[in-house]
Length: 259
Image (cartoon, rainbow, N blue to C red):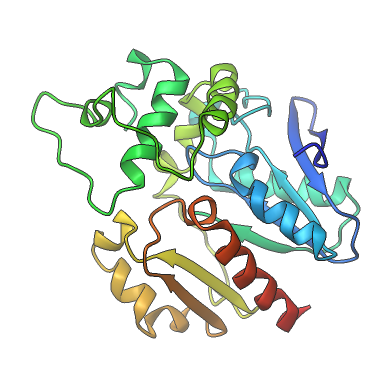
């Protein structure tokens, strides 16, 4: 982990974004995290790709981790995240890069940041998430003595907890969850570059209407014609942390074909 270097990139006059980087190869790969993740969620993949000769880059979205919060968090959208990414690519002198991405709030304030992250990792590492009753919130669904997943250490939890103590969850929840309805007026919505989707078969998202059919059928290729799909049988939501060696090999094999 000490090999990963850290810097900050200015976006406009207001924001300073935290960027983690390792490797010096000619081909750059940019990692985009999900929630409640930060750059650290890609740590295993960044090191593996750097060892394979790639330049691996990950950044904390605005309001996440060590990045500054936006001046108007309620107005933050995916468009801002995309704009931030373009600023970072420009600052790092990268004309183009390959990207890897991952796609309940009211009661978060009752708990310290470490407990929130702990509970989310425990819940989302299950294939089934229990349904809260009328007087419960999502944080009430985890018993205090429930152990962490075997692949998520106390050190990992401490890293996440410390960074969310700094940033809080308000900005992080704006994107992605409050921005799901954002409309992009794209002239051509078909993604034509080669793409790889890796999902866990026990990811609770597979239970969402249409997700399993989209992932396991040819429907997704209507929008991403050059898509390859790999389903990891025992994988849950945080599959890149749960099975890092398997995910690393899938990514490296994919990159070997397309770089």
